Image 1 (cartoon, rainbow, N blue to C red):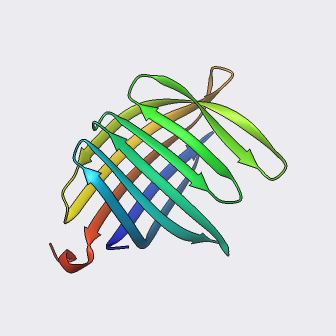
Image 2 (image 1 turned 135 degrees about the vertical axis):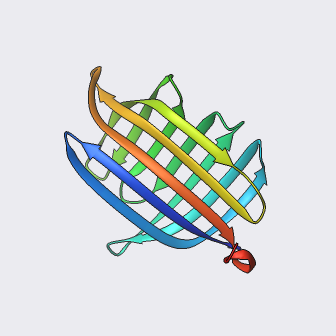
Length: 141
């Protein structure tokens, strides 16, 4: 894990906003057109491993392995079905990307994306993520 990652998220479900910020260690591989970020976080005593992959700056996939496992594909203007698996069952949500912005460099990578979730074609929530990775030797830049 050569990087520190800062993940800021804003989730709005039925008007109830929740902001979170985490800082942890991460790894980064790939190049500006296709890269993967992997990080582990401790969520209330439960370990969650998240893998974010950026494809061509136009598509983001998110896979989270924790007590709730999530697989999502985010593309602006395109609908994808996301799978959410819980210990007591699973459910699906439709995800339509609203924006993706990516700036890759070996020393500092920034990624932002936003999407809206739907269930039975009715909007249920919105989310925004801002991710910054800095190589440990370049933290002041």
